[in-house]
Amino acid sequence: MASDTKSDVTRLLKRWRHGRSDALEDLLPLVYEELRGLAASYLRRERSEHTLQATALVHESYVRLTSGEPLTLADRSHFFVVAAQAMRRILVDHARRQQADKRVGAHQKIALEDAPELVAELDVDIIAVHEALELLSQIHPRQAQLVELRYFGGLSIEEVAEVLDVSESTLARDWRVARRWLYRRLTTDRGSAGVTS
Image (cartoon, rainbow, N blue to C red):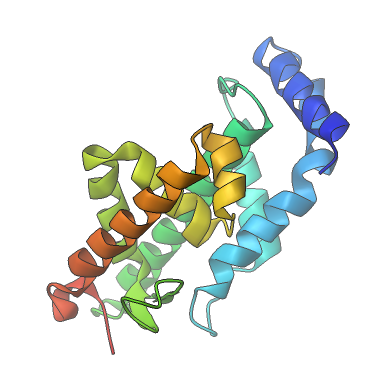
């Protein structure tokens, strides 16, 4: 995204925060493609028969972000961090509704990838991942944000460094530690954690 577009997003978020609801109409075209990419990244990790589509995920997350009182979003990067969190929560809500509808213990699975030295690929229940990330955010908030932005948001270490304003070397260390922690957490009890081989 061009730097002037980045500053446009930040400017519109500031206008919205100061009560200018018309700023939202101008904001959506500037962020839509990136939100769609973020949604597609989330859904790639879902099972193939998943019923929620990327467009619906974008729209529902945008509605959640822009309904009610304006959020205090500092800039474009902050907007996408909050959008990634909203999308994850929507997917978790969707999985929980489907579980309730089925009234059985079936879980939605997502692939836990990008940790080749730990595991080639696991199918992991999205609710288990959500709960593990919630716990990690209490222990180490930056690592939880990093995992969310890389695993769900599809951002590179370089992009996350820009979003979180942290050095790439620090994030690379955080990434190794967080992946190992999540792997242990999600495979400790494969049955109840929803991890299948």
